[in-house]
Length: 257
Image (cartoon, rainbow, N blue to C red; front, side, top):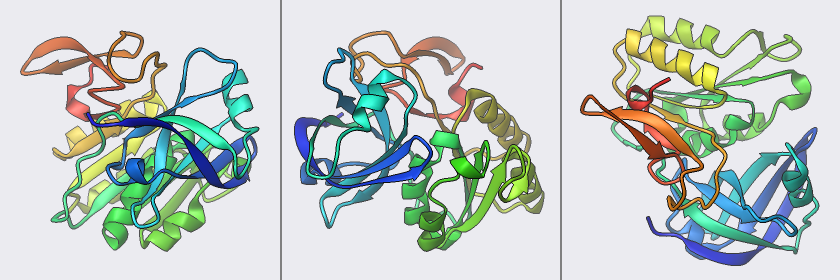
């Protein structure tokens, strides 16, 4: 796992929803090797542990990555106070990302809430071959929809309260698409109950290529501690994997729910 640590300039900052921010960071050496599904481990002044944030976009030509995060505590609240021109301390790119295959003809990308950002770089890779299904609590939480449209992906939005798009969960349109068949791969990131259901539905429909990105609290971010251990199985043997190093992306059938 190749990564670098440094302080990089925030080129752009924007508030894209309530308590949700987008930073574009200039870091050529990170952008050059970053892959969809990897993350940045960010140091916040005044806090001992870094904060893991998924990489949302990768622009190798411009030498930038984009991260999108939601304020969930004191650390991310302090992180949100950085501005354009500020330096952000990152350890990146970290983790095992999604498996990309240019031969796939149809892929389904499923994001739940703040699990939506890592789906964008996949949509940009697969373009018109992809269907992006994203779910949010309500209209005020919806993010990145214009970006998904610009990627060329078919775009489907769900909200719990019906205030935007389809009233319901992402599993509803996913189920409708499954009935039509022809799916080469499924990629998902979001709450654990959502990921479990997506995994089950994919298995029932004989989709072998189903990858999910797990969210776990992390200490070091490089596999040296056991804070982010996740119970998985390989070759019928159970073991604890490091989400930060062996994940955050896993084949869905490897995860023990």
